[in-house]
Length: 163
Image (cartoon, rainbow, N blue to C red; front, side):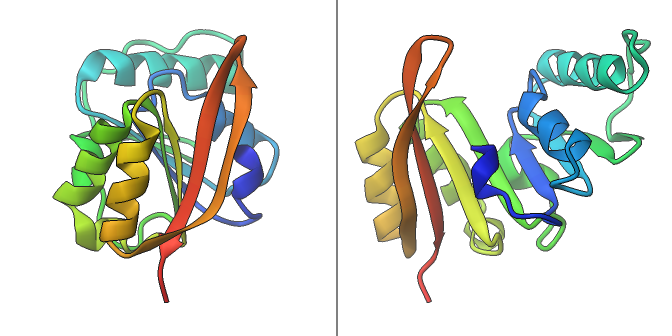
């Protein structure tokens, strides 16, 4: 998925419980910063700890207040795209959820979803439902591929608003 983020693009990672993709992109100079969100605090604490370990080599003290900032990383508590405003990130990543769940996240905030240069999506199930939603909502698929993650094949869909 990292290959679909271009240099200099700020990334939104929805449901970022492990923070692996934002960490990779920022630490390798691809992205100047990332917004990490989750709808519940537990996974967001996990992401916060992962980033802390990557930055200073040790687990960060548990943070009890979101939103917060750690270097180029912003952590926000919120459901789907509700934690961001239009224009705050160039690319949105929504991965590791069912296709219907991803479609629902996009459908609840269509004006935000349409503002990203690209949506990088990784449905764990029901990819066909997500493809159907994207077509109905005016998105075009730029890429439709798969990759192996921990021994499991995963679909990767990259979409943009149809011009």
